[in-house]
Amino acid sequence: MAAENDGTASRTRLLARALGRVQGVGFRYWTRDQAERLGLTGAALNEPDGTVKIVAEGPQEAVEEFRLLLESGGTPGRIERLDATYSRATGEFTEFGVG
Image (cartoon, rainbow, N blue to C red; front, side, top):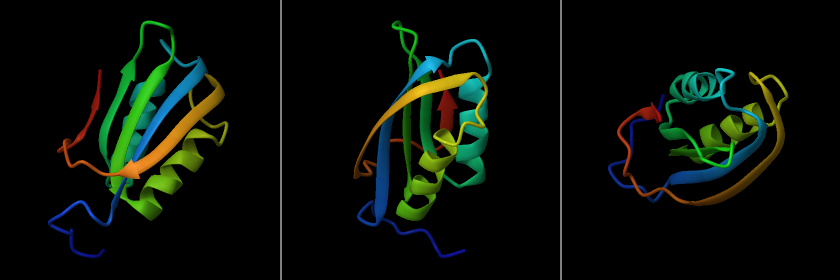
């Protein structure tokens, strides 16, 4: 595995909102496990409207693989739609948390 870059220039941030049956089904913990396996940092958070907000940062290739996993249909519960955007990583996370 390549050495970590000290900055965030080569790292990507995924901000996503999962809509569907995603709360109370283990989805956030599954998301954390996948992110940790890929070496990503960030968080999966239940929102009051029943969606789950996902922030993930890491190497672009790993972030894209993570998004594909989210869209694969193999998650706990059922994602009806995943709204996602990419931007430059901010480096605000040191691990992947669940909230």
